Image 1 (spheres, rainbow, N blue to C red):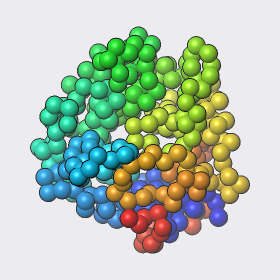
Image 2 (image 1 turned 30 degrees about the vertical axis):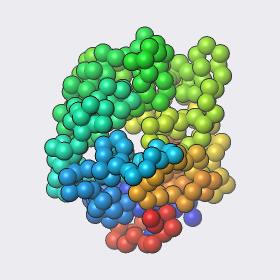
Image 3 (image 1 turned 90 degrees about the vertical axis):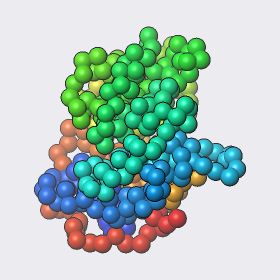
Image 4 (image 1 turned 60 degrees about the vertical axis):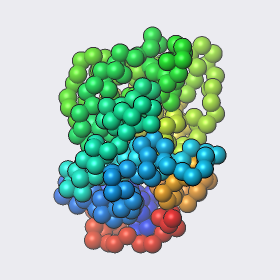
Length: 336
């Protein structure tokens, strides 16, 4: 079985299937659209939407859930990280169910920092990058947050959540979150010159460091950047950085070569990539079997990065074993 057939197989989720068809095959547009339509009602997407509280929140909070006890690890069940997942799944923002869900968030979700409305953002650029990514994807007005992020660009071209505490050096974690937001906003709303210029400076911050190294010494400051997680949450890793550049779709830069070689080195003999470095914390339900196991998310993202970087032609849809009418099978990675 090829890696693409595995991604399209009976134990895969609609979120994986439709993106595989879009990004790795030449499937007809109507087949891709039909696959995407299933995300809001079946599998992971349908399950997440069913968990929304009546007031629009997930787990009773915006960035942190309402808990009886303080968790040892940051939980990932609150509204912001749930919406991040729905965006990653590619749920259609125009469907009635999604429009109603986002309206409830807009009306009721408030950031814990100072009670700001969700789509007004708060004060930390890493959180505001996430707010812009979600808001732009779901067609909400986040222009004010974009303007704030542009104004908060540091001298080296990136962003850092510790800037309010005096940091003058950018962070990979914060920078990738802001870049994803600025690109999503530009993709949905068109070019805003100041924001586009800030995005390009942020891209150069990562490119100058080859997506993994200190500019000053060339060392890798965090070995976990070399391990590919999903979901990434607020953490940076090399595959997340590469998938950002792929999504933007510009011509591959030679400074990405080392990062691409790292991706290639992790492919198993069966053509699949493993899950690595799952970020601990409470979740609604698991999306993957666990670390060191084959990961559909990492395989999908790695394959589409390599296809983009190499300029490869998509796989023929007719050569796959995909059945658009096949129901989702019960699988270990979709249990609570």
